[in-house]
Length: 561
Image (cartoon, rainbow, N blue to C red; front, side, top):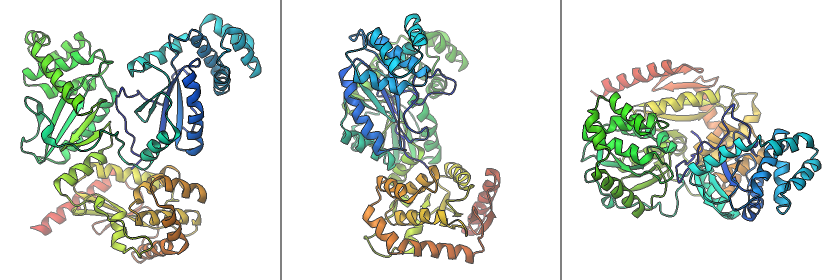
């Protein structure tokens, strides 16, 4: 229930946020909770890197709470003064003034020798004795090498290079280009590139592939993947969950797409193929993704032993020239289809770029299977009175024909609301085909600060954007009016319609109808859940909700007999 974040190896970036306990290379700009992270590889002597800074400044001003910028040191060999300048910035970071030094260095790119760097330090009020000592003893070189290693792993060969939630931008992108991409991310829309149109599934070569599921399954998922790509590893449990959620309905096909900057990937793919010769491709597939830091030859032999493979045969098969043809075939096919990063997945020909959330895959699978879903919500004409059943459809999640419906009475201002969201998110993940959740507004008396948030979400529901606004309110509840209206508009809600729904009182009337309905049912606190008529008051454990669902599924099954 959050903003869709597209991640992939394009080279796709490693984790953009600094890990706890890691050496502090540079403090990020922006809030740690920002849903969009810009990973910037930059060089203080590069004139193009200086030009990208005003662009990022405009982006940070436009998306104050939604964008975080993480700086990565990438001095290029062609810039001889850059390494010392980056060490100067790191020492400034150690003294609490990284961004001030950062700005000075870009403003004075012709003054990056040691005397000028010391002068910059003096201008910023740094301890110049410690600053000079750091430049002399090279104490920050190891930090530079860490960022340089990350840059190599991601295929960064020039600066500036930016990764925006995994999507690569090289050179100096325009404000318009970045704004469009960020707005797409914040709207929850799966982010693709210009090659992302649906293809004819018959274009995919499925001869001789390793696959799971019936050959005549109505939905075929073809994944181009790299065993050394961390984002492919993240996608594995999602793909597995999709496969299990639709028994007998999905054929899952693996395509080999080792990226050229992952040195251990080709041999790992050969190991999977060699294991496949002994009937254990998928077992090796799972082991490789579970051990992505152990893909050298000796590691692969150990994995083969774990799977009880014939090691003599496995070792011989690792050198099988036929595997080169398999890898070459899949790489050529991926290139032909415009695959330029991993994972890239095709669901009956519909392209999904990156390790996207479960609901993105399920929405496509449900559509391909012809299942009725809440995605079938039709946006009514502006200004029209929206029927209660239409609003209910817009404020529900899960199949409309699910045997179990959970009526969820909620108050955005409740301190328990976020916990209830987490509980229901787990429930939907565990029961993708059997449970539908319907949101009911129950703002409690005495919490007037939350009323406006409820009204805005009702107006957004009229436009089919309830859940996007709901997720925004979960992340940042009870924001002031102007901030909320501005950020809701970024999610794709029409501002004119929104203000008309609020000023006319239509959203308030719908909210009051729902609140009155809750009162009539005796709902006086939140969260309250009604599971097919069985009422549960307050926040309960996962096990308690599971028992209620199991009980109602059994009742529904008996009633159908």
